[in-house]
Amino acid sequence: MIKSAVTIALVPEIKSGPWIFWEDLEKGLEKAATLGFDAVELFTASADALDENLLTNLLQKHGLQLAAVGTGAGKVIHGLTLTDPDPEVRQKAISFISEMISFGAKFGAPAIIGSMQGNVLPNGNREETMNWLAEGLAMLEKKAAESGVFLIYEPLNRYETNLLNTMEAGSVFLEKTGLENTKLLADLFHMNIEEVDMAQSIRSYGKHIGHVHFADSNRRPIGFGHSDISPIAEALKKIDYQGYVSAEAFPYPNPDAAAEQTIREFRKWFR
Image (cartoon, rainbow, N blue to C red):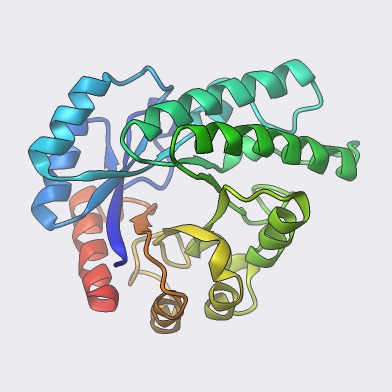
């Protein structure tokens, strides 16, 4: 069964990002539960920024699951990426993500690698950079497997990374490097920019998809842009996708309205 999730960000430095609920964890969980979401996707400053017992109790209180944990704070706050030319920085990035994997795994939630993948620098060597990415992911997917979860890699659009931008590129990379415990994140906003046919990409590379970000063409909630969701929803059903469809979208026109619009669209297409 395809499940619904909504984002909650607890990192002030990323407040301008595409997250539905902000700052108040308990209030965000309460609203998510009231609207009928199955889970939340959580963004914290670090693995130890949130008390695990508190999160456990709050999730149980509101009958919610943890869908995934983001790692973007590692880049935004600390400037860490898996492809930095400095091996010490790459190791710090691996350590930061490893801690996030351990944190999320306690709730059965995988960690997402988005901005922490980095870029090929202007004077950098692409092959060398891609090798660094493969080496980092190999270590991290092993850590995830040992923790009982998979790892999520997110192909981003060309304006955010020059590494892997499409489902095809991500799938080829996973297969070429033998990354068997790493799944792709199909973010509909990024796909709207990069894919020729989003639904066809989902059908073609569905076996690698482990998470979906539910956002329209303008990164607002579904229904507030021009993406045609009907074929996308059908493609996810066609590949028998069983994961989360998570609203990583701007809180437009406000958090409550954005959450209501998201769950309304989710039910329209998946229930």
